[in-house]
Image (cartoon, rainbow, N blue to C red):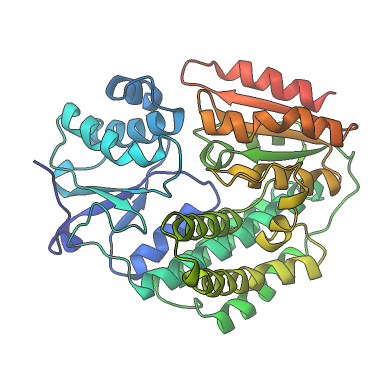
Length: 404
């Protein structure tokens, strides 16, 4: 029998959110807390996450699904959470890959592991898998937007500054300070309106700009690829930690650009599929609103001299991406990010993707040869992460790029 998250459970149950993006999910969790949900982000304390995921998932599933499932069931098996007062939320964007099946795979895995009483909530915009105790409200929407914007801002500042800081650890300390303050603000429904966001953004940029910088050897690395693998330490075996070890100056795009891409292409696909050409203006209104929200951070960042790729900027490259305009999954966005990074001096590109992901193979790996033809002085190297791959394998490949 399917366990449902009821209204009464909002007072008794903790909703667990899988760690999927290092810079973002603390603030995303704060947005849910603002709306009365008891929310926690799962961590990586248990060493058996991957093995647990493989035990309860078919190994034909992609690595993100295996790790997300393993992260949840491992926490329950180790008694970190009581299954009788625990629910699980899985964000789902849909797309032409195995991601839309995560909800059902996780439910089946929980049943197999003996935790069938744990409700699984699907966070989607299609209205599927409804639970009476969970709903998307305007307040939650505004809180989530504010959380994503602030997280993107902190990520961009951290990545722009960390490798150049004179005093080691100063950027991290400032990041931690603001991440905690913003989590408290969002949780308590403060500073989530546009006018307040503008003021806080300026304050944050001014604070980070006080960090003294030094000249460094220019070893710039751009990171692109599948959103979970490139953004999650669990999925990429600590890619950023490894790059920091060699003091590489690396950069990757934020979450709001990906969200805008998904919103834009999903609405366009829905209109085309259902032949609703008259509703194209709705798409225009939605995208105008979302682009305007992203501009709250993109414009101040660029004005202050920091690198940040807005969705508008990348979409303008869509027709330049070597006639590669597919919008399936990450589609043209990965190639557009590559172009943007290369033209900003990031001549070495790492593509982080899960092994066996056909969409990533087509949209990420499939474009490498043609990108190399366009940018002959660049090195573009894919790193495919798999549940059976030892961390040293990926590290050796990354080192090859760093030392080339």
